Length: 190
Image (cartoon, rainbow, N blue to C red; front, top):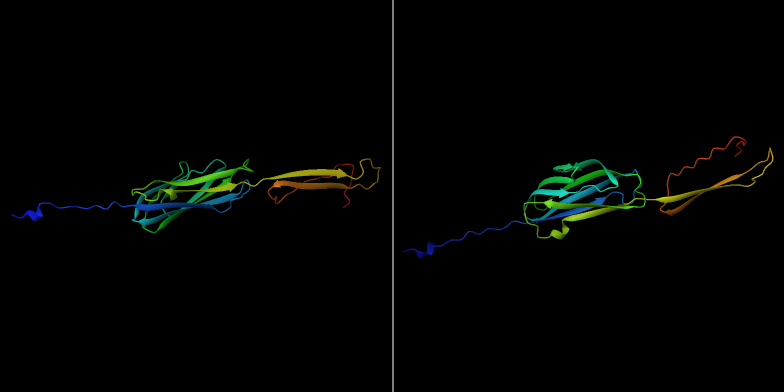
């Protein structure tokens, strides 16, 4: 007698959240032994809140982990996993990783990538889920030459040593120190 109530619908809206990752480094051309800071920003571009976000950023060979400073969540240096947690629509979270540049890396490019590896919501724009920050470790080929103006002087003669330090590149060199201790048999004048 009442056919209008013989069916009904229940709609669902599948939530999605565009999670993006940007990564920068504070010194893209460090020297060996320098301390550098990588900053990873994870943003929720919406349209919904994002939950259970995880980002992986395992530091590459050539740099050594020193410390981490997350704005939220926890980072495990051994696995590179940052358990971010939840990010509200239009909010973000930031992780700073401090590392030192290893010896023996001069002249090399070290590439570091951070990527979203988990989230509860579907991501409608997956192309922005990872980012890289490269460093090029500075190197400078320094050459030293030394000549004397008189290779066969007599006792009491004044001789002049000329020392030349040349930077054959490819980068500028800073804080250079050369040691030249005069040997026995000659006395320093100037």
